Length: 425
Image (cartoon, rainbow, N blue to C red; front, top):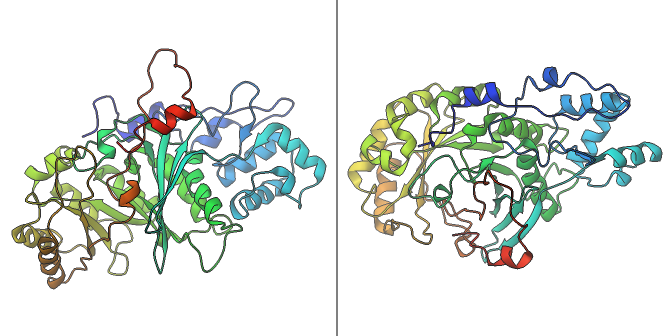
């Protein structure tokens, strides 16, 4: 369950600060009024958002309203924000000089004050099965992992929402890495842009994409960083920007019940639930958040999720652990629990990681479990493990980031120490 020092999302919103730069010689809009719709979340880094001193401000991660306000404060005409939006999010431009629809003098003025920056790629790995993983580093030297999984009919990007995780799910490698901080909207949307860079998908293509789907199933619990996740997904869904349909975006939660309805109302994306057990006794161990929001409360929230229907079913993720949760009796109980919910079940063979306390269920046990659920009328595919050879499979993500000390920071790591660090455990 979340550590005692992690406040409830509403408490974080009440105390979160907003930092904004006022440009010299220009009267910027009231930052409090602008940010009212997207307060900064707890422990959110400012590295890609708000520079200090003489640093240039990064425009990546700003919403339409924020970009318009920034240009207004800069003294530019209102249409300039629309032009910038197009160049940043539709064309993926990283250099103002390439924005040929803008006057050269204006481009030079922008470049003197602003930048268009992605996270740094600390390491890039490719699996034998085509899966690609990027270890991304931010200005404060913290890191997260992002994974692209190509399939014949789609290409899915697995995006992280936190450095580490508030939760301690015992089957998940990320759960062994304590929460360091939330990611900003810029750092979340930057993961998508890094993948599009690598896949050569600029301008945003209408058809034949390699990146078709986004799943918020990487490092972290996205509903404990909802404001920044929502801001990033709104940029991703904008038809004049990254242009990913909300029907192609899935947010996965371990069960932060009070935030589920808000997710459906504000974003309308697909919902996935990390269930993994059919009794509170077992789920308390596998997913300790269950002690706060037990199965009955979680399923009730799912029954009332805005927009769910047989056409938009909720996915229930169920990791298959040998001798733990894989019996026929548990499959039958799962069917009983899901009654009345437009649902499908995603069975996930456990992906091992160093020191993991579990083993994967046998193929026979997984098939028997799937058959019981399927015969009851629920889709129950078995997820094919992808990227195991580079520790990019479900439950294997972990970075070398650690919670920042309260004392002065030590020396920046060298390339040698980065290369030798246990990025994946």
